[in-house]
Length: 300
Image 1 (cartoon, rainbow, N blue to C red):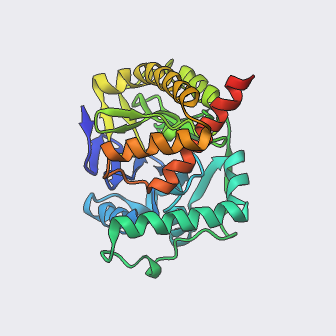
Image 2 (image 1 turned 90 degrees about the vertical axis):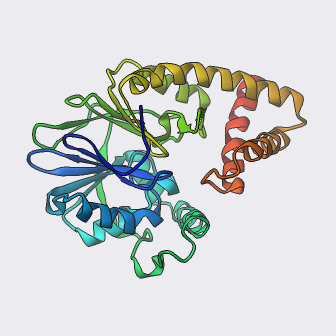
């Protein structure tokens, strides 16, 4: 079953944000954590939902960056400045990315581009202090790391491939997995494979996650899955990633070069999915990265 709207998923777990950009609120007896950082334009929605769902904001002590792409870190600076008590968590590589001025410039520019397309004049984000500066510091997470919320534990797995800084969060008490884009994006009836940095590592990360018992799978985009679909999602993703890799390698053999192959793929994608939330030029850069890796790997 798929949950698309914000609200309570199960005892101790809420989905917040919008359909295409969601974050999760996990509550323990001692403290609560926001898992993932979404897009900047969901800030007003998250603030409203915290009040509407009667969530105790004073208990929120942690916010976890699962990877440092613009559509997964958008709410972090605002909430850290609003609630200085928050501990911001990310992988070491995630903090390295955020410390890079070029990466921060890309996060800001891409966030502006997508937010203008999605919200128009509904919210004036200039009134919110959401942009990344050098004032956000925090904790480093690595494989085997744990965050104790009191009766609820968040376990960390390093899952590179989508990005070099990707981590996944797992809550054994709920059998809940939050893989971010280390697992395919569940868009409509498709699985969108986004192995941006290293396709082989992406497949290896899926092989690590498939060993976990999962009853809830909280994706960062579009849906939260429960029951049978959540249980089978990662094993199905392994098959989808293998098939997608074969298809992309075939496309590289057919097209003149990586750039032409990426343009052909993205043009076909938007013909079928004109309402996808990411702007076409951003997705084009993603597939250039993926195809470049595959082309180099094939050449070896």
